[in-house]
Image: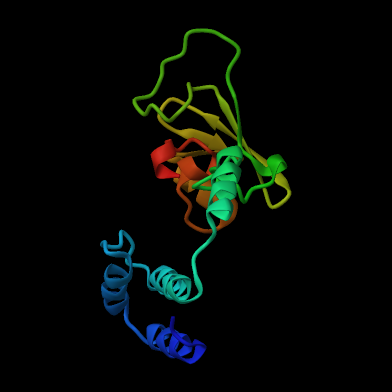
Length: 170
């Protein structure tokens, strides 16, 4: 069993290591390669392992309880898309009420005649989808990005701004 001074010295040495050096230390401590190259994560894992080896690991009872708790919790790996927007700011799509309308070539776009609604900075904006263009504020725009730029004053991906992007793009 190592003394507290030895552990503190090893932890101080760990804090000065590069990510590559920490990966080597991780390999030595855990006996396997790290899947992460993140320096802070490697430092924390190596520091935990050093302390666990010196002070003792979790009891079997604590490990069992942790597994039980982990099974009961709905763990989210990624935040939901557009999680930073309030519900009132989420874009909405209003579809036209029937009729046969020609669809554009882009699968992300709704049918012509659809109204795209977005609340931005406490103001409600509506854009009508036309056949190959978009009508907003009495003007016709060739892309949703141009409309989003007209609304915000800065460049936006129009599909993201109006909530029409594929899930892979979010």
